[in-house]
Image (cartoon, rainbow, N blue to C red; front, side):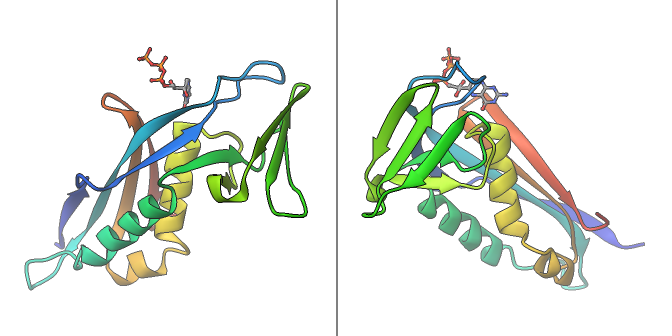
Length: 165
Ligand SMILES: Nc1nc2c(c(=O)[nH]1)N=C([C@H](O)[C@H](O)COP(=O)(O)OP(=O)(O)OP(=O)(O)O)CN2
């Protein structure tokens, strides 16, 4: 009977400071604001005869790289039904919401393939970017991945992947 274990990664530097606003309807959104988001990743899998799950260092580095990519930026959703996002000739971004026009310099904004910049969607996108097609996880005998994203201590959302789909 294979022995399983769960490794939990939530190092101090698994975080990113980012701006956003949550959109609640075609006419209601938050004002722009930011958070120091924190990320928690757990990996569940088979303990091998060397007493280890796979070397978690690769996954820690991937998570830290994703945090760095999302650090110090303003996040906009590419797939919101209520927000139109386009780039001008210089690559700067114009976002339109309920008659408002919001402008961002290209250097300050990250457009994410999400419906809303919510904890749910950030946890999902972070997890999907980490797991990819699942081949590295399966090769590492990792059967379950959980990613939690928090906007502040005590407020988070989680996403889960299982190797059996
Ligand atoms: N299902 C979701 N609901 C809400 C989300 C979300 O991501 N998913 N996000 C928000 C706000 O963006 C978020 O709550 C703002 O955080 P904060 O500045 O902490 O504002 P709060 O009012 O939540 O802070 P308190 O200090 O707890 O008053 C809203 N809903």
